[in-house]
Image (cartoon, rainbow, N blue to C red; front, side, top):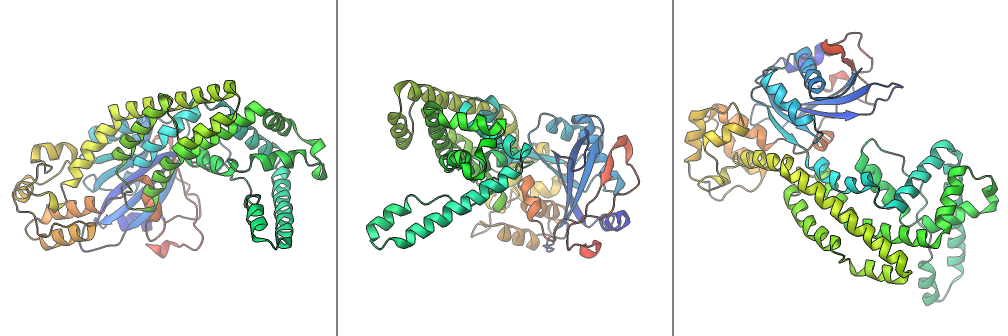
Length: 476
């Protein structure tokens, strides 16, 4: 199988994109693991096909900029990836990732490499800062105890689903008895939440946080009734279940949980929606604008100005509880503002400079101030043919100006005789995956191999493959 992948890459017909991220090891191990994905985008500007390979590397010691760059270099050398063909490194914003990219360029010889942190990861760090800080004490404790209950006593998950099914059946039976439309509409308000098992923890931290919020924000009361229902042996509740019940029995705590869930739904869920937009579309929205807009909202919250509905909720509870929860939300907003400020100080600033350079491959920017000269452009995109770039930047912009990637690719295909080298580079960056999530949507699916290989690349990194159902090595 290695020979098949190697032969495919050795054709030298593709630019290479490498994705790297720390991930969980599916085997019992104390080792670190990093998932490395390679995407091959054809150099032929008219070829629309994409090939993607998924490789998993296990680290015996630790993950840092040295081991990460060594690991990526090991894989690329094993498959004989040409230094000139590796054009893009997409990664999250872990502290060691930018130094890893610089080390790949300076020490490993991948001089044409452009590196971009992922907008989804950058944005997810903002709400993640709140959960890491533990400011929203009550919902943090609730989700922790629930995860503990279902992890240590898994049969309670089955009991919870069965109890939901029973409650839903009872509600439907009662609903069928109503003939008066007014009473029926009133009864609709009492409809239980959809029967659903708690979402299991994900390897993607922001997804786990969001899933827990969406699941429990409308099920806390029902879960409290479930825990006190003697029909399924509530007297035998394990310690984690008893702790949950104690948490929900306290009126002040229950009030705090309700307002905190409302806060998360109002202010954090829109950010998670933006993250999903990056996954479901090519590039998603403008990440810089998303954070700039969110800063305006956060500044208001930090000063004590909340959504009208949250103000109503706070007014329903005792003054002491309302004041405490209001302080928590203001502190959460301040925490997120600090995270945005630290990201914008360097990571996002560098990201924006690179994005601005890559936008220059769009011919609609010709004869505008946004178009960069060769010196500025080559700082972010090395390996550009100087003569072709200087000829390109003085051209008149096409009319009508292209506004889609398809139109931009078509323009470069028409000009490939005039710009033989620049056209292939331009089309690659126009088609580039704009986040690490994008390679998941590549077609055909990832190529995986069914058996572990018995060889080790240098630096003690062990390469492991798994088979994706329904996919064979002939997919390439």
